[in-house]
Length: 509
Image (cartoon, rainbow, N blue to C red; front, side):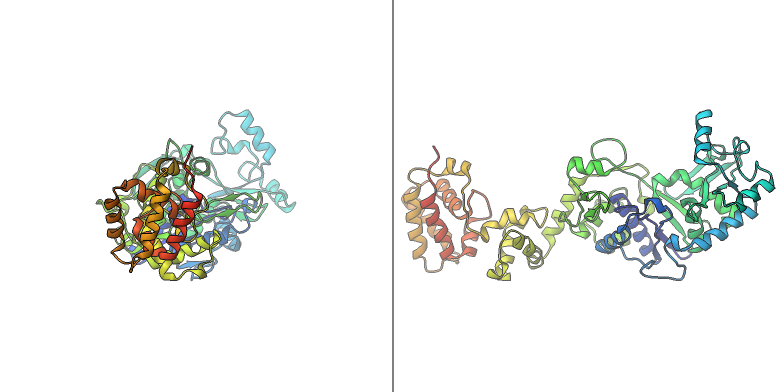
């Protein structure tokens, strides 16, 4: 295989959809496995749909996920510019090449004339059967064409597709796909109104000039592949045509059809890598980063939506994904977006994270909830995290699981009070407080045996006493092992909470 060069070519028309992220990831894995180059090309030829901030968003999202770019607008490279709006001269030259070779023609049809043709002819298509009835350089006299051009009439350049051909697309996932040229229309390649090419021309010219070896893109682009094959032939580049790879769609989690933002809003999961603030509407869309997902968990999750490593392995680092990735194991069928599995990946990665590292991620959550972290040592926060991390899917979940380590309860769960707070409870807990105060080593291993022995000697109900004790300290009957909690809180804080609970909790009616 010659040098592998792949490209991810998003349009800056809004936030990067998670399906686009997966396409970028597969390109990156393939390039890195073969020691190749990853190109980021910004396809901004649709000037009317350009959204400010979208290009920066794309770069930031890929950087967050660890998808490294070798050549691009920011990185530079030998085949720039890497932004299509800066390549107008190149596209003009190649448009002229097609016109001079008779492979394309100029069309002057106005939007009103095109609409009239569609109204007059069911399923109208601008092609070999209709082009001579329209206003273009094939149907008009040469002097009329010159006059229109001299007067500055707006026009488009259309690709001239002749019927009667079987166009073969060799796809590395789907095999050979054959399309009859009769069903293809004469696509617009260039528009004089904004002096920019359409996707079809710019895409082919840039892939060729940037020496792209493999075009790995979403399944939705498969219908355009026959046109691209014909364009490569029209330019005389058939021998350097890249290999095509059309990835399976990401599907709705609970039905048929392509995954959309509406599905995420309906089911409560992000469909963008980062939070997006729409500059036009002001709407805010959630992102995986701001929702608390770890980037390597998102990468691992996405990699397995449409590809498998050939065995049952699920947890893989980026380096392991690069080593194992193969187009042979990509699916032809669409992959349902199992967003709950994404939570599982995040949970699994959080469990594997060093407790001290996780504690540092928890600090901003504490501060956001009004806790002054300067009042707690790093060791204290780390220990608190270690006791509850098994219950979380996201860093933000630590607050619900560990808040009692940082703030005493100001209320008590009504259902637990009703079940565990008996008329005799205050007296029993007063005795317990005296016992705890008398222990020589409160944080040591002897606290639990001493308390359990006291309960047994008194003949008290173990569950009622311990759950009432937990209720005063935590505020509800949940949390890790009770004596791990008290050991971290310390004698003074434990006793203060215990005595406050005795005074404040009243039995439920």
